[in-house]
Image 1: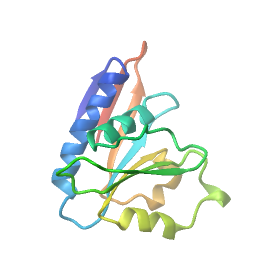
Image 2 (image 1 turned 90 degrees about the vertical axis):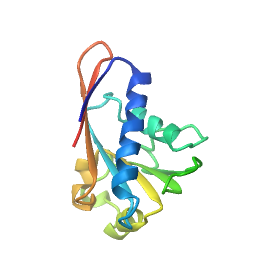
Image 3 (image 1 turned 30 degrees about the vertical axis):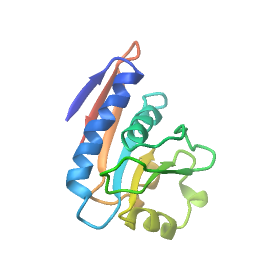
Image 4 (image 1 turned 180 degrees about the vertical axis):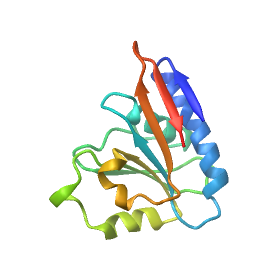
Length: 149
């Protein structure tokens, strides 16, 4: 699926389509739903996660967890198969500072988690094979191309 957005509001709306797809595909397999968000700085990865949070009924402000690596938010929307939105920013990870694989496995193995990972290429070996990959690209003047694989 491909989307073109002209502003952050439209980028956040794409999140509804992501939720709908993952709710259909992942609600019965017994592992977390994982969205791997790839793109250059400023392409709207965190904006899309904010849209995911809104679509999941998260009442807190969703912010980039760059310095703390991960944040968890309670999913409050009824009818969702997940209880927690886990937002991971792997930008600072990789190499010697990379957390133990067991931490990621616990997050990715819990079917009550909806996990959004920014900079997934930094921890690619930990990303589940059935993750939904979303690539965001700059297209000038606030426009973005969003490709969902």
